[in-house]
Length: 309
Image (cartoon, rainbow, N blue to C red):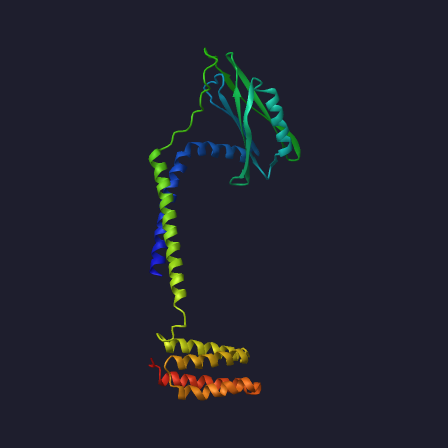
C-alpha cells in the first residue's frame, strides 16, 4: 500500500505541475480572451453580437490564402439563430464576394456554450486568392436571427486589401503564425510525459501488489494453520446460518482431510470424519446440529494442537 500511495501522491503532484504549466497557455491567450469578454458583454446587452475578421490584414498578394472568420455570440434567452438560414447566407456570401478566390479548404463550423447563457457559433473559411490588381474589397455577411419573435437580419462587414505584386508567378506567402514560447512548450510536453510515466508506475505497483496477494492463498495451511482454519470454520458457520447444510457438510469433510495431511492427530480427526461419512449415507443425519457439533470439535482440536507441523 505504501508504494501505491507514494505513486499516487507523485502522480497528483505531477498533475498539479502540469496544470500550472498549462496556465501559461491561458496567459498567452489573455489578450484574445479580453476581446472575447467584450464581445460576450455586447451579446448580453443587445442579445446578439457578430463580427467578420480576415487574416492577413496587411494585404493579400496573388496566391495568398485568406482566412475569413465569422463569430456570432447570442443570448439564448433573447435571440435565436437558425442554422439552416445561416448556411444559406454563407453560400450566398461565397457566390457574391471573393469572386477572384477559390475555396481553399472545407469550412469549419464550431458551436459551444459560454457563460451566462451565451452561445457561440464560429465559422472559419479559407480562400486562395488570385487578384492581380491593387484593390480593396468590402465583404458583407448577413446574420439572420429572431429577437422577441421578430425576424431580423444583422449586417456585418469588413474590408480586404489586395496588393499588386511585380511577379505574379512568385510562391504564395505563408500565413503568419502566432509566436509561442519554446521553453514553455517543451516543459508542457516533458511534464505530460512525466505524468504518464508516474501514472504507469502507480498502476504497475497496484498490479504487482494484486498479483502478489493473489499468490498468497489459504492453501498455505502449513504456514498459518490457525488463521486458515478459523476462516474456513467461520465460512462453514455462515453456510449453516443460510441453510446450506449440504455445502457446509462437504467443506467440513475436506477440512478434516486437510487436517490429517498437515500433521494433526488422526485419532482426533477420525471420529469427526466417520460422523460426516455417515451423513453422506443417511441424509437425515446431515442436519445443522450435527454440523455445528463437528465445527465445535474441530475448533477444540485446532486450539489444543495449533502448533502441529
